[in-house]
Image (tube, rainbow, N blue to C red):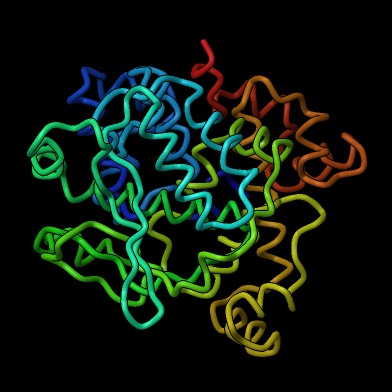
Length: 356
């Protein structure tokens, strides 16, 4: 089995948009692609692309432009380490609601941010998390910032906020609606494989809309889990952006929260997807896969990514993936790929250049 055969895929337009944005910041397209082992021929005529390679490219761009919030709406350049501090700040909150409110306070004082998430009450037991300007902005500055920001960047920002909230609670948070202030772009007609029940355009704000009860979900992450999350960011956020509506993709999105031996049982995942375990297994069979196969795929894909992180030893990766011994990880990886973890790193498929 080759490295890319079982990769989760994302729309190719995401990759092209990232490269275009990087070029606007002075990055050389060919140099970037070469640095992370992507060839132009992989992009020609493609409708989708490996999410793992996209994540590696994203990491490389963030390192090169020195902007940790690259590709998302911030209004300025966010210094390296800011996201880690944000995570360590909000994991001490009791609920998602409190985490959103504290995130807004953090963005008010952290250099580089000109926008923040603001909770807005709605009728019918729903609330919106809207993109709003920080309090120090001058008159009309926020409106100009939104007008100058592409629809794709706004969509990515909302998607990453949503994935971050899901990570905080360790489960899927149903998203009722996505609100956009602009007309529906042509690219959204093919890209918007959204987790939201409904997409609304030409709205007063850009926002996520949830049933209020979900904002009271308890935070389950802690400072210890933050460190592992940050070490491989934006993998856990990027991997889910633009995910398709297939049951396979939704199951893998949940499993990617924890690729260790403590992955949730099929019964737990079925409950999170609001279906019986029998229905879950039948739907997966219809899509040509099984729950156990998806668990194995998630561990394999995570191994590929972890091996691109130069500060992680093979022993640490084995532990993160739930293997009792490094030798067990060694055997499993060779079974998956035909080569050892060390050979994989030396082959240039893993991106050590990002740490140069």
